[in-house]
Length: 148
Image (cartoon, rainbow, N blue to C red; front, side, top):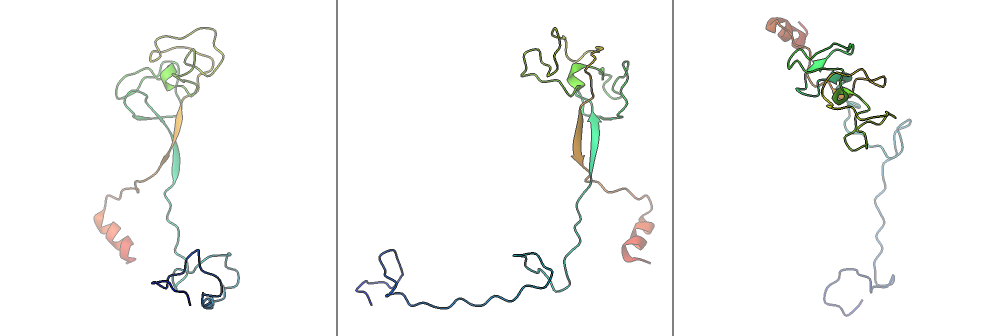
């Protein structure tokens, strides 16, 4: 035993001074379970309820969800902005020299008006579907909930 006031182990202790205690034994893992996995409940694993994802095209001005088919004369139904413009394109990059990632010969200005660029591809974003389909009949929803 050392002559220290407290009995906490520290970096100055030798292995001789410490009393070794055996670690408690872990229960054996279930057969077929992945290594290091713990069982959360006795009923088995829960079903994963992850929301789905979807690709959408949104208006660069107002954010309205648009159809994927954008023609040369297309306009936004909400704000009437031109949809075939540089601001709606996948290659649009304000930090680039000509504000486009494609090899264009000259700058196209203004970026939010209609143009006939050969490199135009509408910008799509991947969003999470967080809303469930809406049911109009409350009674039907109640019956579905309790399986009547």
